[in-house]
Image 1 (cartoon, one colour):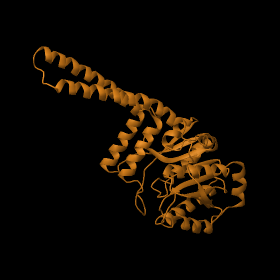
Image 2 (tube, one colour):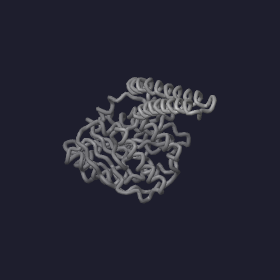
Image 3 (tube, helix red, strand yellow):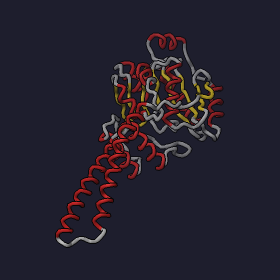
Image 4 (cartoon, one colour):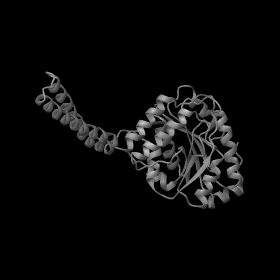
Amino acid sequence: MLFRSKETLISGDKKTPIVYFVLPCYNEVEGLNHTADVLRQKMTQLINESLIDSRSRVLFVDDGSHDGTWELIEKIHASDANLFGGVKLAHNRGHQNALYAGLMAAYSAGCDAAISMDADLQDDVDASDEMIKQFSEQHCEIVYGVRSSREKDTWFKRNTANLFYSVFAWMGAETISNHADYRLMGKASLEALSQYREVNLFLRGIVPTLGFKTGKVYYKRGIREAGESKYPLKKMIAFAIEGITSFSTKPLKFVTSIGVLSILVGLGMLIYVIVSVFTNHAVIGWGSMMCSLWLIGGFLMLSLGIVGEYVGKIYLETKQRPRYYVETSL
């Protein structure tokens, strides 16, 4: 059980923030006990150093796991109900929705700040000390955990990650390079985040647009203690596409540009065919086929691009489907 002294409680009520650690979980039964033990020690240290209030908690969010993760969360909660809590989603809704559900649960519970991190503890939990200090002392409403290096990543993952951040910036969207979802958000930024109603969430793109005073904490990412990664190549590609299409209509503009280029090429082919006819170098049927192919294809792509511009704007404005349903909470 977590020790909470009377002195800490009094001090916490007056000076220290109530901080919730929010951890989305999907099939994490192999490593969750270790995660709970590490966070129990960390919370004890933070409370004893008067960095956080004794009412601070760890909140596990089960994203529709099917390996007994929720049953294990219930056991962890039973071991210390004041420290550990849980939110169970009725169905698997993806990492971003699970993270959002946990942040909103922490906000509704009255926390002063919430720290989101992965349940595998690859993010350095000790970096949270500096996050909390920047929040309390420097009044940073959002503090980003940024990887200091990617030396432990494979060559492919390191370079594709750098490419993603470059493309994302080129698309005109705001993002923090080498930052995933390890961050602290204060009550004001959580309230602002709660106003975002879109279903296809990409928090790495949304949070930087909130504004507020921000800070950064650099850390070295560790290795997974147990279980396997929930982000294979297929999911990483889908995640990248989701992020880009959620924050930019440039792909649609690119299609429009290709359509215009096709029309120009078609006109060029038309001029070439006319010249070929007058110079007796024309091949029967070839000219009409090529002109038809380029001109019709170009017009079709241009039309799709123009319609896509409007569909894209409507798409960004009207995503109102429910994100998730909370089955139960602890």
